[in-house]
Structure formats: C-alpha cells, structure tokens
Length: 465
Image 1: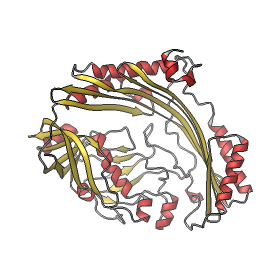
Image 2: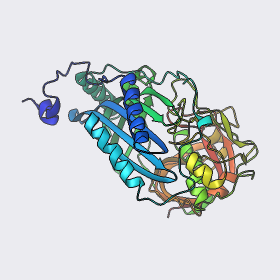
Image 3: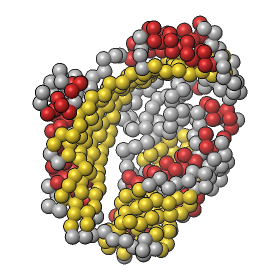
Image 4: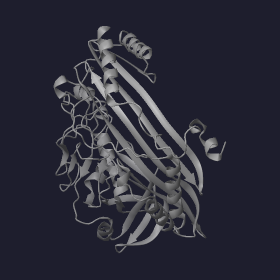
C-alpha cells in the first residue's frame, strides 16, 4: 500500500486518475419518487399533514502542507427527514438508510412521536398557496470532474505559490481543494414536490511568515458554483502569501476611539449580525437587540439591502426555500429603514405574519454601495484609523447588541497604511455601529450569501496598550 492509500484506505480500489469519484449515482427523479412514497405512507397512517426531504451528496476534499498530502477524503452522504402532524401535534424522524424497510420504520417513528407531543397552534406546513410553481433553473449545478491526483496537484501548486512569495514565509497551515455536488428534494401533503441539484467548489491557503519580531499568519480563498469561476490556484496562493508578509512587524496600538474599516470579506459579517437580529426565532423569543424594529431607522439613509434569490450561479440562490415556499425578490432595508423580518412559516405564525420564504436562511443579500470606489478610496476617506484584517473570537451578544472581538490589521495615517497592528480588541454596540456607518464601497465580495463592499464605521473603541 502506498502513502496515499494509507491516508485514505477506503478509496484504495479507485485510481487517483479516476474522474468518477465526485459523480452522484442517483438522479432527481428517483429522489422525487422516494419522498412522494414517504409522504403518502405518513398520510395512510393518519397524519393530517406530512413533509419529507431527502438529500444525496458526494464530494472530494484534499489538503496538503509543506509539499506533502495531509488528507484525501471522499464524501458520500444520503439522508432523509420526515415530519408528520396529527392536528397540531408534531413528530419528526430521520434516517441515513433509504431502503424501503428503513423508510417505513422512519415514518413509524415520526408517527409514534407525534402521538405523544403537545399541540402547538403555530405548527404545520407552510400554506399551500405559498408553494413554488415551476422551479427556475438558476444554473446552480456545475460538476467538477476532479480526479484525486488532479486535486492534489492543484493544492500543491497553490501552497507552493504562497511559499514562493517571500523567503520569510517559513511555515504553512496548508492549502486545500474542495468539490461538492448534491441534490435535495422536498415533498409535502399539499401535493408539492420539488428539488434541484447544486455544486460548490473552493480553493484555500494559509501560510506563516516570521522575522526578528515574531510570526504572523494569513490566508486567502475563493469559492463558487463552478470551478471555472475560481481564481487560479497559484493566484490564491500568491494572495495568501502577500497578505501574510505584509503583516510582519505588527505591534499593538494605544487604546483609543477611532474610525474602523471592515474590508468586504469581513463587512458581510456585520450584515449577518443584522440578519440574525431580524430573524423570526429571535423576534418571537424577544431575544434580540432589534426587537420590533420593522419600520424604524437602523442604518444611515444611504443604505439599502435587497434580497435577490434568483441570481444565476450565485452562492445564495434558490428557487424555493426548505419548506417549498417560492423565493422572491424583496427589500430588507430601504433608505436605512428596516422593512421587515426573515421568517419561515412557524416563526411567521408566532408573530402573526406571513413567511418570507427564508426557511433555511437568506438568499443573496445585496448591500448597495454608497461610493464608487473600494477599499483604497475608503482608506483615504478614513484618514486615520484601523483597517481590520482579521477578526477573532465570538464576542457578539445578539440580545444586547454588544460587540467585542479580537482583531489584527493595519493602522492608517493620512489615508495610507502606516504599520500592521495585532493583539487588539475592537468594541462597540451594533446599533451604534449600524447608525454610524460612514460609507460602503463598491468592492463587492460575491463569495457568500451576503454581497457587500467594504464598510467604514465612524468610531469604535480600540483596546490595545
């Protein structure tokens, strides 16, 4: 057995040049028939409502470090979940075994659980009239016929490019290549059946540089629905190396209040905190700093946030949500005013509202830029302050809005980078941070569900020396 077989013995029988390892061995029609049968079986057993979702996924993940293969993993997962309602009593069960016998047993378990649970007046399927009609083809599936040996070579190329940037790059946390393909199908007793295939691919690299002042690390990555949309592995590695080297010589800064600039890849996290605060569960539990915020001014008047679920090939696109509800364009923030909440059918009923088609999350949030320039222009506009390069820790309180996180980055003087900084903490309250956004750049990061440019905040507390 060679080294690669030792690393991943379950694929010993597969040639490293075999292009079939990330190919699904089931089609959507089979899965649609399966969930129909499960829903029908639940209804035959007396359920007044029933729903089932099944997924099948395959993937290949490779990581290398210092020129050697660290992991080579093939993933193959299937699973089914079924929920039944007897009136307003609910029971759920799941199975990774999709045989006929296992499916019947799974329905039996769900039915048995439902007979012992208390009624919940807000329970039940999403309303029938909300179901998606003909599902749009959003071009979300672009399989990558990636052989293990090819993935290894791409990862090695990525890491080597990072290490070649500068002789001060002395260590590596590795580079990785990931490719995943899957199908999810949902059905319910309204007669709805729908699903679609999707893919996701990514390249990432992180390295360590050192000099007489110590060591620093940084990373870079790219991701997309299609591997054809990814940056070349060598470019990802080169960016990771350059980002790492420029952090050498970092030092603490004095404790003070100053402007803080979040680059696009971190700015979307700020928007994510807003989305969490207007989520239906947080609202009906009254566990959010944005309670009953709809109709109120949250951001400056120049800020708009839109949801666009039907962008082709985008990371957050979906023709339906996890309950079969049709997704649609909507405005979450207009002229800085909150327009509503992010709801599934259950949270909507708890609040006396209607689902927004967000069971499973949001779908492509677009944050409108307020200036034509990007990070460079915002650095100049800031004049003096902190450009964040990395955030650490989870110091965000979703109930109070208090925000405190470890950070590293660069100190800006006179609109230019003065020196790298580290071992600092940035703190504030999210409500104040949202109101004090000065500008949003046009350097939009499209790699996630939230698409935002860099965000400049007028003032935060920076704790250092």
